[in-house]
Amino acid sequence: MKEGSVTYRITDMEESERPRERLAKFGATTLTTAELLAILIRVGLPGVNAVRLGENLLNTFRGLSGLHRATFAEVCNEHGIGPAKAAQIKAALELGHRFIELEEDKRHTVHSPADAADLVLYEMSAFDQEELWVIILDTRNKVIDIKHLYRGSVNSSQVRVAELFKDAVRNGAPNIIVVHNHPSGDPTPSPDDIALTRNIIQAGKLLDIELLDHLVIGRGHYVSLKERGMGF
Image 1 (cartoon, helix red, strand yellow):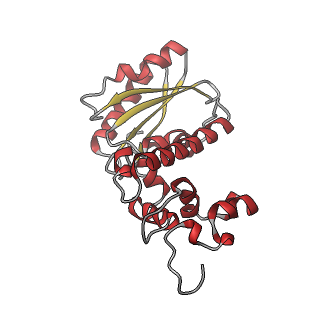
Image 2 (cartoon, rainbow, N blue to C red):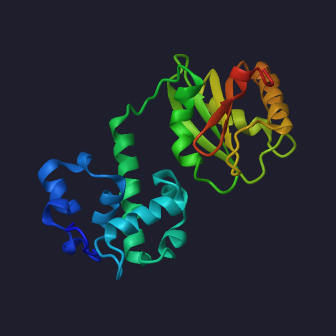
Image 3 (spheres, rainbow, N blue to C red):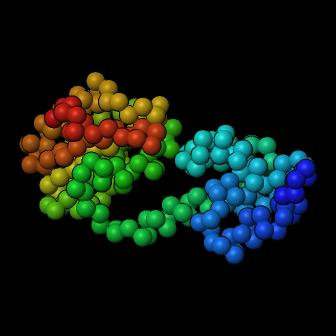
């Protein structure tokens, strides 16, 4: 941009500085996140070009992870965005997520709590309600299935422990991992989480199915109750 000029549109920028032209010439990896968003946004506002709108979005939602967690309506309501631009941004984020899933082996092997967390962290971090999932594993700790069982309050008095084992029994699976999220973003296990873990372990002994871990997912982070010796 020329010194002293005011840029309202990307077309007002020097051609060598425009995100789309730079992507075509040098590749997408050379662009900042705000510039990549600008290509989706395309048109800015008087006094605010698309790159600045991209920067504003990242600041408002605290990065791409926050933009992923935001609802469609929340993105729409940002000044200068609207339904069409919000749809493009949400679609791009989902395409990126699906590409990563396609590149990964569909039968993941769980060697550690981090491996298990990698399977669910992206999705569960965005939930605004508690959910409880069960990862069902074979004898080699390869993932057979991930079952979504509860939505709402997850505590030792409301969760039916037998439900957690139903699909493992049906598949003849010897191991499970239980995962649930804390919408507050703080993955610190509660007393109810610990009590639920103990109940699951005891029931598993009767069925000869081992609870390998219980993970609590927060905002981009997780806690392994097994690693912390809480309930195990």
